[in-house]
Image 1 (cartoon, rainbow, N blue to C red):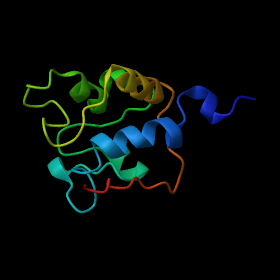
Image 2 (tube, rainbow, N blue to C red; image 1 turned 180 degrees about the vertical axis):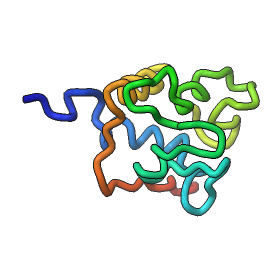
Image 3 (cartoon, helix red, strand yellow; image 1 turned 90 degrees about the horizontal axis):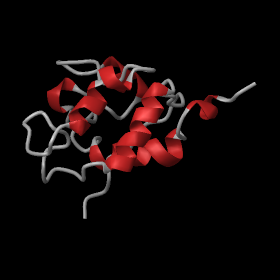
Image 4 (cartoon, helix red, strand yellow; image 1 turned 120 degrees about the vertical axis):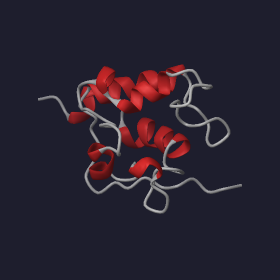
Length: 117
């Protein structure tokens, strides 16, 4: 029997660090830009005011992937320039594989806002 981890990248080791570095600063309980929170599984799967952020098994339809693939200068591109580091191409591919593999996010895991320097 295959474990859930065989479906895609490891959430704690590979996915959470990307989301924490690039997304959670503006999409958390304290801020929730666009009425979107990404700090908990439930809130991330719920999505924001405009779209479903994560559609498990469908990265091409998930707003998370769409906004990361936009050119940085485009208005809807995330994260906005200067707000947080943009994931690189390899990180975006990991996110795609994670979403396509079912967006496995262990229950009870809350992402943390990165410490400011």
